[in-house]
Length: 338
Image: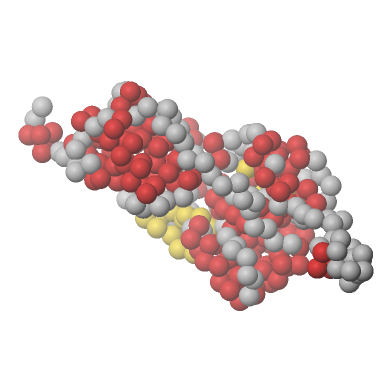
């Protein structure tokens, strides 16, 4: 081992290993970033000791601290646990140091907030025009936010009215509908992307990130406009490795802000995020009489039990009248007794 290796901090080498294993297991960049973040927090919580010096007692102490002191949500606590399982089982090869038998936090079974069509119309009208089409697809096609923003031109089939989601949650692909109401706007958006890409190429840019090793197999595709993002960012950037002038897709925070601003302008009292629109899509399909298996397929859920949460989001109490709505004397025998 040379002097350079001796100078390298152990945490840096550990995170390099985490990155290599994450790529080998085809974890999404967002999942990898979340795991790295939890590993760093765990090391800092443990006074910067290397994870090989720690064990199940330390893992349990960290998770209990998150639950009691930080009061994180159940989903956050479970994510931290899974990140440490990944570290010890897949990266370090010492699964006994982080037993999977630690009880998982149970999430509350609250049904998600959803918007009815009238509320959805008000919201879309309040979204700034530059981002209205993307927000419309979140509701009209039931897309997750990143599924929408990572659509490429070639993934849109206007003639057959369908979208090809290639990198859904868990790396699964699926087809979903292209709403007829936005076919014209989609066609216009594709034409805008084609013209923008042409100008980028003329100026020496026009490159786009390609999935996996496809760029090595077909380097010309990185400048093929069909691979361009359907919702490109307003500015190009220079890649630090290749020196290519590339254009990213619109950032997720941009759409999140657009939805948040629209909610404030409309005065909606519900807590609405981009994912709320996906919930509303599923609930509205069930209200319209579509079977749950069809909705499951469109949403890309692995198990139908995940889709069943939307059954609870349907209107409850239909056909049941509140006592407050009953006429006076309906259940009264005349002397105030029932």
